[in-house]
Length: 225
Image (tube, rainbow, N blue to C red; front, side, top):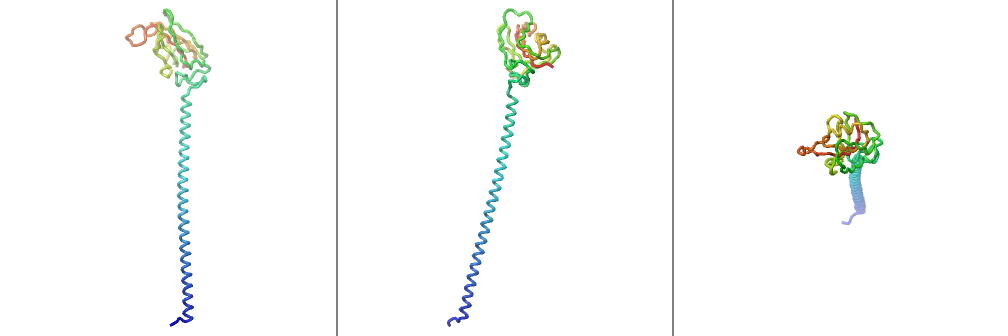
């Protein structure tokens, strides 16, 4: 039986309603997909921002560490570097500054030669005259020195070789008599040559293991207190 006009109208309305429903569903699906894409994009941006922040913090930490290390290295180099000023550590005596106004030549190890002739008494020869106070008996003095055999100039001892000065009480028997007698009265900042006969040094007994016979020392007096 052919459809009536009423039935045809109902069918047309039903088709239009179904089409609108399908379009609504498609729009809803598209909106949901767009929302999901936007959320995914925001998550990626958040992760990227977090990773970038972490990278920046890591870079800053590395920079701070390198800067601090550079400062420490610079401080160490400054502390360990000798200076040409009068208050700088002596070249052969780390930690022993030269007296104020001292001759810069005290920064250089002296060349010591052999003596001439027979040595029968203590001979004190000023090489550089210091401007500081005179050394007094019982004081502790700080010195750089070179010791050689008087006869041939062969070196047997040196504070310069050890890289540090020697400190000791003077005039009280802590060192050989030639030093006790020869350095009391010397002004701080002086360089003196001590020609010491065997009896005022270590004697002539080679079995002692010490340098025997007459000796020559060149001594820099860096301080006394």
